[in-house]
Image 1 (tube, rainbow, N blue to C red):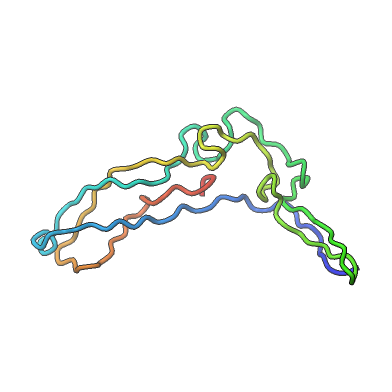
Image 2 (cartoon, helix red, strand yellow):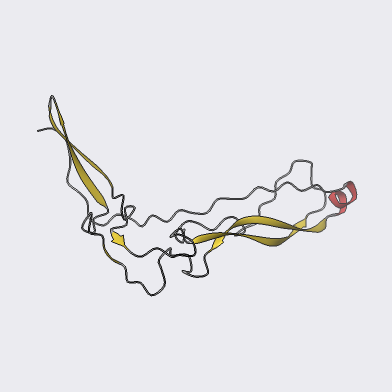
Length: 146
């Protein structure tokens, strides 16, 4: 038949890094010339306090995924007029991690919850219209601790 390589061992965990947030601030002329501090509220995803961002229900024990046998991948075979075609894809049950665990009830297994935070930002003197300032570590929390 045609196609298909073997299945690899243990796929990487499916944690996704959090997104950056973009906030537009209006700064009056004098503040732009001399600089100032601005405080504002930003809505964002924050790490789930119940599962500390893992997405796993506290107290539950992660175990090898029964669907993929811990490999994180499943193989499907399709019959075609030219023969059999094997296709490897990420396991739908464990999302490619090879491990299944009970989902955290607070965040539905994502490891993050909607929240908001007050941020203080130093506006430097001489800032131009449309200029962007980056504030580290104030964007969204990632999925499953990413």
